[in-house]
Length: 531
Image 1 (cartoon, rainbow, N blue to C red):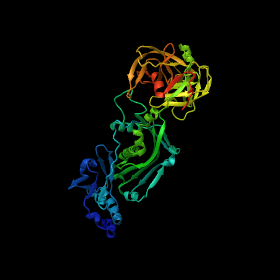
Image 2 (image 1 turned 30 degrees about the vertical axis):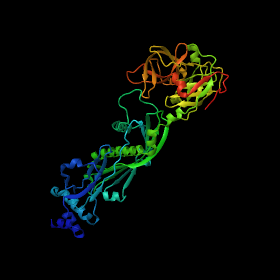
Image 3 (image 1 turned 120 degrees about the vertical axis):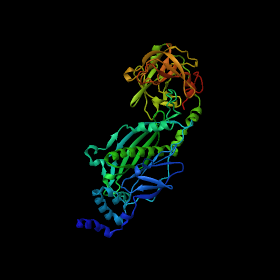
Image 4 (image 1 turned 60 degrees about the vertical axis):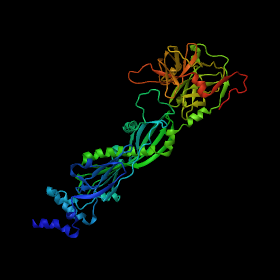
């Protein structure tokens, strides 16, 4: 027995006796922003942390202490306070730590040779820009993961001191056969969690207003996670079971999209999460999840505070651009369609790579109308007529705000549809919707219905509601009377479980007004002008 006691005592002869002198608790100061709420280990619970005279007393027990710092209007910050090794007494501490495992009453004696930092400066909080009427609403459209095998890493260190020095063991997804080709997910749960955050901050309208979404008021965001490193340092070399902390370093490419899902700004951010304490393998896995979520939110806050994003959120230049459009004069037709059959012949399919929409001619020399969302983006457009002839189309002008576009094809001798200028559209008027629903083979399909409502939109304009059958591909098609008079342009429909027969169109009088189009007799000097 004497030999065992001597053996355990030998390391003490070559080190400080601090492991015996140090108290159970260490006095530390935590500095945070004014007005914040500092929560340490669940408000100083379980005797792990005490507070006196503005200082925190952290127990030297080898376990990390979790800190949450919160403030109204700011993102909560997370930190893990961990003990560091003192190199001169590490061997003595190791010996006493092993011995303490055999004698439960002395369990924490082996940790007393290890200190926390004396001072933690945890200032620095971030917030989202305040939402007001001048700032667009935002929605996460898609959050994907595109990680090459070597871009997903796990750094572990069985000593917090070594971790701070960069001494880590690194593993990558390439080390596992299952992930040797990387990790790719088209959409993730983080779209939902970030949208919940946007709802809390007032960036997403939850009133269910059908007519609130439009180009001037809405912005979409796509995100792609392209790099992820998970850091897992344990507290002390001999205390794997005591736990440690998890943090993550990530790279995300954020893309702002306009209402029509056209990319308008991209920014790549590299940022870290806070630190999340864990005490065993079960809580470690949960801490990994929390760290990734926190890093994504930190990256999102950084993106939202980007100067260019702030400009986009407040951008009203499209109003000025469309208001400054010069009048476009086109030849007044000598004849218009006079029945549904002729209206079908003057309706078209607007084809582009990956999809199609509908449209209709308004002049004898190839001017036609469709929705802007049909032609938005860099698209090569092909116009397919009722006789199956095809023409390349040019976008002459458009209104993003009102979802209208004027196209031109090189042809003549057409019989166009006449656009109604009547602003008093009567309810229950019998109408026909002409377009190419779902697939191209169904070109110039006719569906019958009535004007079932005239609705006001959030931008103080009106929109036609109809019960005529409308499907994908009908967008941009004409809503006409039996005489072929255009009352509106198909724009959208409500979809969802239990919803049928609710579609919408842009009133016909908006076409000429918003696109600044006028018709002149053929002897005008301004025939066939273009922008």
